[in-house]
Image (cartoon, rainbow, N blue to C red):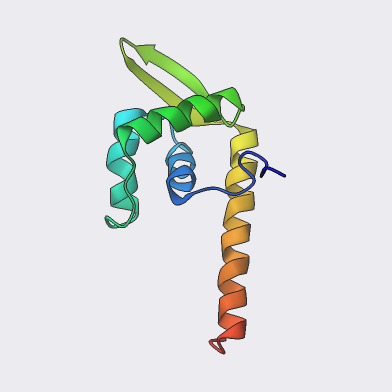
Length: 104
Protein backbone atom coordinates (compact mmCIF):
# COMPACT_ATOMS: atom_id res chain seq x y z
CA UNK A 1 0.00 0.00 0.00
CA UNK A 2 1.52 3.39 -0.96
CA UNK A 3 2.40 5.87 1.75
CA UNK A 4 0.03 8.82 2.11
CA UNK A 5 1.38 12.05 0.66
CA UNK A 6 3.00 14.30 3.29
CA UNK A 7 2.52 11.68 6.04
CA UNK A 8 6.12 12.43 6.96
CA UNK A 9 8.38 15.15 5.59
CA UNK A 10 11.89 15.12 4.21
CA UNK A 11 14.33 17.59 5.72
CA UNK A 12 13.94 19.81 2.66
CA UNK A 13 10.14 19.79 3.02
CA UNK A 14 10.36 20.58 6.73
CA UNK A 15 12.68 23.55 6.25
CA UNK A 16 10.74 24.96 3.30
CA UNK A 17 7.58 25.00 5.41
CA UNK A 18 9.50 26.44 8.36
CA UNK A 19 10.75 29.29 6.14
CA UNK A 20 7.20 30.00 5.04
CA UNK A 21 6.03 30.92 8.53
CA UNK A 22 6.94 34.35 7.13
CA UNK A 23 6.10 35.43 3.60
CA UNK A 24 8.98 34.83 1.21
CA UNK A 25 9.79 33.88 -2.34
CA UNK A 26 11.70 30.89 -3.68
CA UNK A 27 15.05 32.70 -3.82
CA UNK A 28 14.64 33.68 -0.16
CA UNK A 29 14.06 30.03 0.74
CA UNK A 30 17.13 28.91 -1.22
CA UNK A 31 19.17 31.31 0.95
CA UNK A 32 17.41 30.70 4.29
CA UNK A 33 17.57 26.90 4.48
CA UNK A 34 21.39 26.63 4.49
CA UNK A 35 21.53 29.54 6.97
CA UNK A 36 18.98 27.87 9.29
CA UNK A 37 20.85 24.56 9.22
CA UNK A 38 24.41 25.93 9.27
CA UNK A 39 24.93 24.44 5.81
CA UNK A 40 23.77 20.94 6.75
CA UNK A 41 20.70 21.08 4.47
CA UNK A 42 20.33 22.70 1.09
CA UNK A 43 17.49 22.66 -1.41
CA UNK A 44 17.99 22.61 -5.15
CA UNK A 45 15.87 24.97 -7.21
CA UNK A 46 14.14 22.12 -9.08
CA UNK A 47 13.20 20.43 -5.83
CA UNK A 48 12.08 23.71 -4.28
CA UNK A 49 9.76 24.78 -7.08
CA UNK A 50 8.30 21.28 -7.41
CA UNK A 51 7.55 21.19 -3.67
CA UNK A 52 6.10 24.71 -3.66
CA UNK A 53 3.69 23.63 -6.39
CA UNK A 54 2.74 20.48 -4.46
CA UNK A 55 2.31 22.37 -1.18
CA UNK A 56 0.07 24.93 -2.92
CA UNK A 57 -1.97 22.16 -4.51
CA UNK A 58 -2.53 20.54 -1.12
CA UNK A 59 -3.41 23.83 0.60
CA UNK A 60 -0.32 23.80 2.85
CA UNK A 61 0.86 27.18 1.55
CA UNK A 62 -0.73 29.93 -0.49
CA UNK A 63 0.66 32.35 -3.00
CA UNK A 64 0.63 35.90 -1.68
CA UNK A 65 1.94 37.94 -4.59
CA UNK A 66 3.43 37.70 -8.06
CA UNK A 67 5.97 40.21 -9.37
CA UNK A 68 7.03 39.06 -12.83
CA UNK A 69 8.46 35.57 -12.34
CA UNK A 70 8.93 36.12 -8.61
CA UNK A 71 6.19 34.50 -6.52
CA UNK A 72 5.84 34.80 -2.77
CA UNK A 73 4.16 32.30 -0.45
CA UNK A 74 3.09 31.89 3.16
CA UNK A 75 2.09 28.95 5.33
CA UNK A 76 -1.63 28.25 5.75
CA UNK A 77 -3.20 26.89 8.96
CA UNK A 78 -3.19 23.43 7.32
CA UNK A 79 0.54 23.80 6.64
CA UNK A 80 1.14 24.93 10.22
CA UNK A 81 -0.58 21.78 11.49
CA UNK A 82 1.57 19.60 9.21
CA UNK A 83 4.74 21.34 10.37
CA UNK A 84 3.75 20.93 14.03
CA UNK A 85 2.90 17.25 13.52
CA UNK A 86 6.29 16.65 11.91
CA UNK A 87 8.06 18.46 14.74
CA UNK A 88 6.28 16.24 17.28
CA UNK A 89 7.27 13.13 15.30
CA UNK A 90 10.94 14.18 15.22
CA UNK A 91 10.87 15.05 18.91
CA UNK A 92 9.39 11.64 19.75
CA UNK A 93 12.19 9.96 17.79
CA UNK A 94 14.81 11.91 19.73
CA UNK A 95 13.15 10.97 23.02
CA UNK A 96 13.10 7.28 22.00
CA UNK A 97 16.80 7.48 21.14
CA UNK A 98 17.70 9.04 24.48
CA UNK A 99 15.65 6.50 26.39
CA UNK A 100 16.98 3.43 24.56
CA UNK A 101 20.56 4.65 24.45
CA UNK A 102 20.58 5.53 28.16
CA UNK A 103 21.09 9.24 27.49
CA UNK A 104 18.34 10.55 29.76
